[in-house]
Amino acid sequence: MSAPKIRVFVVDDHPLIRNGLAGMIDAEAGLEGVGEAGSGDEAVQRLPALAPDVVLMDLVMPGLDGIEAVAALHPRLPQTRFLILTSLIDPAAVRRAMAAGASGFLSKTASADELVAAIRSAHAGRRVLAPEATDALFEASRQAPTGGDLTPRERELLALMARGLSNQEIVAELAIAMPTVKFHIGNILGKLAVDNRTEAVLKALKHKLVPPL
Image (tube, rainbow, N blue to C red; front, side, top):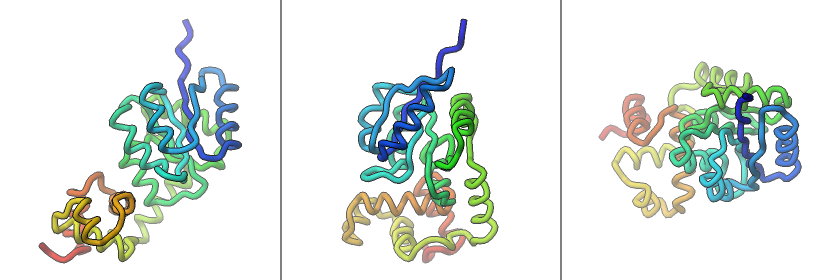
């Protein structure tokens, strides 16, 4: 009896890329395309009912980006593996993706064979990082001091987090929108290589990135 096919869903806002990935999946023995979405918001709406084995998720999309979509979906689909696809490898984005629950981070320049191998590896429960992503993480850790890549606005938010302000209170304090606050906090967690606000604050205090409490 043959093993069941790996069910794969594709999320990308560019129809040509989306169709190309879907065609690659359908042409590969052992893989089965079960749907496509053109945005992170559409993926969040459609994926819970389908519960695919693996999702190929574009990073940069209008509305919810790929990492925000993974963060929203991962708690609801703990058995689904998410692979982030991007044209530009950024170490902060790699860390954000892993913190959100992604199983891998791949370059869109990867060959069809590399993508298929990544899908199979992710489905088997293994982490998958493109060589470019591994190199970017290594260079970032070697060159930058902890928090050295935080922007002034991110440091401002981090200081408010250290004071115990909630997201809603930060919105009121800085007069910015809630999605902007969430975006900045996601970047902060990625750049500090932590999983949540508490760890971010503890690390910030340890490395003197914010005034002492």
